[in-house]
Each structure stands twice: as C-alpha cells, then as structure tokens.
Length: 424
Ligand code: HAM
Image (spheres, rainbow, N blue to C red):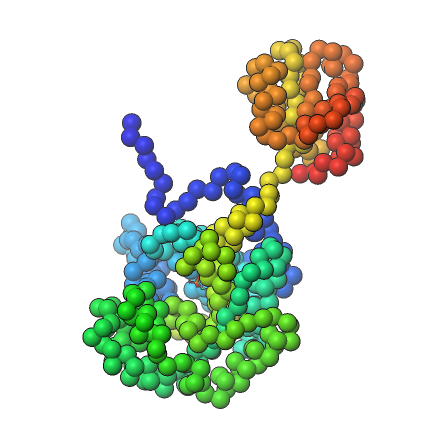
C-alpha cells in the first residue's frame, strides 16, 4: 500500500514537542486573564465574504493565500487566515456592545494561509490573539502591547524588539495615498503585474509586496508619519509617551504597514533577533482598527488587537533548550505473572491520588521492563512480586542513582510526595 503523507506546510505536534506548546498556551492564558481578557472560540471556517470585506481583496492573504471552497449547499467558505475578522463577526452577531461598553477577548487556534513555507512559516499555523473593543484611547493600544511584553518576558524571550507606527485615519490617509501614488507612478514600469493593479485599487498594499523590485521602490516611498493629521499625530504621541511611562522600549518605524486593510492609526510588530527564524522573525503584530466593525455591518466601535505566532514562539523556546515535559514519577516493574493484576491495581490507585505512574502492559522480563523505565525517564522504580505482595513492602529505587529504600505499599503516595517529586 502506498503511504499517505500529511499536507505540505501543516505540521504534526508530537508528545515531547507538545509540552512547549502547552507551556506557551498556559502562560498566555494566565497573562491575558490578568489583563481581564476572556477567551473566545470561533469556528475555523467562515463565510469567504467576511475576509474579503475586512482583510481586503488586494491583500496577499485574501488574493492569494486563502483556502476557499464551496460547501455542498453552494456557499463560498474559507478556512480562517486570521482571527480578528471572526472575532469581530462574533462580537457583532452576539450584540456584545449592548451588554458592556468595553470588551476584552483573547483566542488561540489554527489559522490557514497558502504561503511559501520555511522555518516559522507554515500553511496551518497557530495564533494567540487578543482584541479590545470599545476604547479609542491610546491607553488601550498600550495595554495590548504591555500584555505581549509581559507574555514574552514570562516566557524568557527577551531578545524581541517592538516597532510602532501610525497609519493615520480617513481624514489624513487620502493625502498620504496621493503622495504614495505619485511616487509609485514614477516607477510604474518596474512594478510587478499585481502591484500595477494595486496601484489603481489599493496603493498601500504595494508597500508589502514580496517582489524584490517592488520592495526597493517601497523603501524609497514617502513616510506616512509626515502626513498624519493633528488628532492622529496626538494619538501616536500619546501612545509613545505611555509606552515610555511603562518603561517599554520601542522604535518608531514608518514601514510597519501590516499587510491587512483594516488598520487605522497605531500599528506595531514584535520582531525577534534570533537567527533561527530568518525572515519569519515577526513573532506578533497588530494595531487599531476603528472602522472595521461598522464596515462589517456592526456598531461604530473602536478596537485594537494583536496576533502572536505560536509556532514561532515555540521555535524560539525550543532553541533555548529548556525542558517542559513532566517525568514519570514511578515505574512499577512486575516480577512474576501472578503479580500483574496487583501491579495494575496499585498503579491505578496511585494515579487516582495524583501521581504519574507507568508500567509495561506488555509484561516481559524484568530487564526489558527496566529498559522501559529508563526510556520514560522515571524518577523511581519499584519491583512488585510475590514477596512484596506478601509483606506489603517494596524497595523504592531512585533512577538517578543512590540506594533503594524500603517503603510500605499502602504509604507509597505520601512517600513519593514527601520525596519532592512534583504531583501531576
Ligand atoms: P498577522 O501579522 O498577519 O496579523 O499575523 C500575526 C502573527 O501570526 C505574525 O506576526 C506571525 O507571528 C504569525 N504568522 C502569520 N502568518 C504565519 C505563517 N504563515 N506561519 C507562521 N506564523 C504566521 C494578523 O493576523 C492580525 N489578525 C493581528 C491582529 C489582531 N490585528 C489586530 N488584532
């Protein structure tokens, strides 16, 4: 029979690796809940129109990278390429604004983009996202960035820099767009075919084209920061002042355009210095999107959010070489056939009491069972045979070396806890 492989760019996460993921997820849950963010879970599949209207038709994400298909009822559906639009849809659908004026949500889960894959860039990847609805104030932008800073610190990922920018709003962006179009028209013959179309339909998107020549032209484009209107300038100034007040280091970078259409005013990216990620070094990005809700048929609610690349955080943590798995506390080896049932009962009882216990259900020689104990990295082993069953006592052997010590089977759980092995 021929072998069926997994889909290109979509990874399995096996035990041994998954502990890093669980550690990051646990830490993110803790940090975001400290900031008052509640978890929201939305479906993996949405109406295609949701992403076309929010992320934007001229973006690479919608134009080239979306997994879109027709269901049996003839509806056009897409695997979500990001989490902001689905969360916004849910917010509108459940009339959340009527229940509270300020809402903070976070989410985690797989997203899908048909991208060229490399280390840190996959077709199924995972985001931790956070969105705050109802505050137009710079304090909210800064709160979101602070949460990411605290998450990264708690994970020990300190070599990450924060870049901030402002994209202006409907009052000042048209003037910038005009300047940009002027610059791009001077190079129109050199632009790629897609960018020629973008120049007419959505010139800002030329700035995040991945073609080398288009990137060179984008590099020489005028800075959006010089075109900000007074309210946008004041907002951006306040964001920077508040970041300073929190002692968060940042750089202003007028090239943070973000590749999605819904942003207004603040945008930001967290960029890791470690070489393992290469050009996939952006571990998180986000910004304000004050006009999105209304454009999706919802209320006029300002919002700001962030998306963090879980896969990328895990790669960085794995590079750090830390161990996250919890070892088996006790391995029970069975000395004779007649003790097998008793070993099963003993293991079951200890697990019920919260300990991580293994035995080899295949049976086999004591030697092969001990090999297994070694393989699973058990902290202690214990041999159960006729003699131990009769006396109710066995030898507890530390696998790291040292002398075995006698222990009463009835007191095993207390004994293991007292010896400092962490409970599950
Ligand atoms: P984004 O910049 O497209 O923003 O994605 C956020 C993060 O997801 C990136 O910084 C990166 O770490 C990770 N990421 C993106 N694509 C891939 C990929 N193909 N493979 C691995 N990781 C990837 C958004 O998605 C916005 N929804 C963020 C946001 C939330 N803005 C406001 N609220």
